[in-house]
Length: 258
Length: 329
Image (tube, rainbow over all chains, first blue to last red; front, side, top):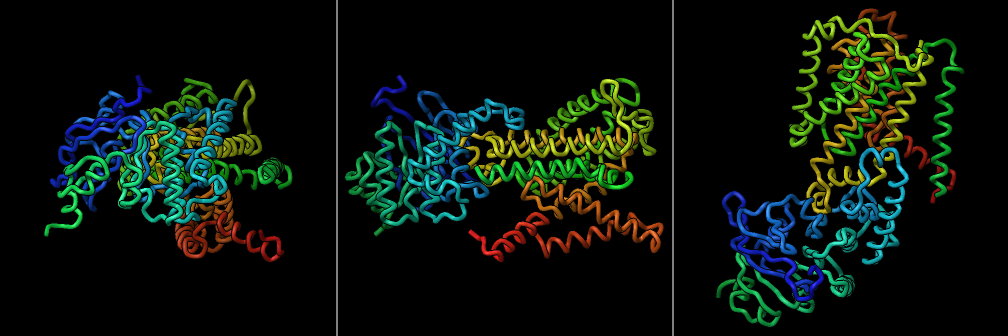
């Protein structure tokens, strides 16, 4: 049942969230099919990042339901939601700045390893084996984004584009079934965007479900099967790239009233 | 792997050097001072881990040191448990106390956590002073027997030197293993970005609690050993002055590495002994006050001239030296 094609992976119903009386999300509903990519666009402040934060449990919703693989995950803690197979990247990187590139990726394997404080402190044989496995998986994750050659560099030495890729590698190390990318192409050079497109195709080929938040329209239009548009916390449109492009409300939201 | 081997070699040299100290120095003076260095270093290592790596601004470290000392001391002085079992019992008691206190307090962050734990420091010190019938009150806990296990009783600085340094290096080894494991990555991750850490599946509150309890337990073990070494414990030994000394050690040594506090405590104790020896003639009755003034000036000077502490400065000197010799890579 979990691997059924065409089944719904995540189903969001009537999601709302306010901050100090301001409605950042208002009754947002949508669903994403397994193994597909859906994009989320909207002007600045539309609530795109808030939606990701609510789905991943960084913020609890005020109301609404989030069914992931049939289970309601709304309001669970972020680390519990992560353990269900939901990974994300961040608009502002949020990498672990005191670590190397490889350690960042290895941290993504946290939920799939289990050595405790005592076992780690005394370096039990089981811990050493696990550490070896995690190191290999971290390298595999970096290889996916083409950064395995920079594994030992500290994060601060990397340019912005590569830092975004480290964020993706870290998320991939969680071996998620659902991945949310928050403006992955922001600040990337043209050739880096092309590489990102290739990577996303590879991930879709592996059966990953992806939710993409992005401002780069050609990038979004070329990748997405379905797009939803948020404006001021409300979903104003949903459909194929062509339908969205010609939607009057969308044009108005982006360009303003006549 | 080559640097790894060099690192192991360094360890062997350090351990061998420390093991020889009591033999190559005359009398027991240096050995005695080095016992104190070991206790302070054990404490400061835990505190640096807590402050620098985990970013938890907890000031209750001397409290757990004191609770470890008093628990083991009382159990042994009242003949309830043999001293070695008292160390284990104290570690368990402190672990439970740290867990119960940490669970609510660690929800606070930054200076709020510092304030709350600072309060704890005074509460415990005053309580120990007021519970006369159990703790011996402000006069201190007397009649603590020396440490003994399996019929062997530790006597004098010589024996305690090895046990204290064994504990210190053992803690250092344990901490360094932790920091190079998934637990260590979680500790650093939650310090760098709590949001990102929780989104990769790290239970941040539990991770903080783990570090807090772990460092409390090592402080407790050092405390238990300390009270058997002195055969005495008083509430004033575990209060604010100790906190200031620990801070000085961490600042002098540098908190970025785990071994920095060991260099820091060697430096602090050497400076203090030098002051006591040389100023005895000039200011016979003011040593404690002179200490306080001197450490204050020292902290300010170090923060200005070598903000990364001894380790950072030595590192930079080594780097400059290598470049001077033309071996820079």
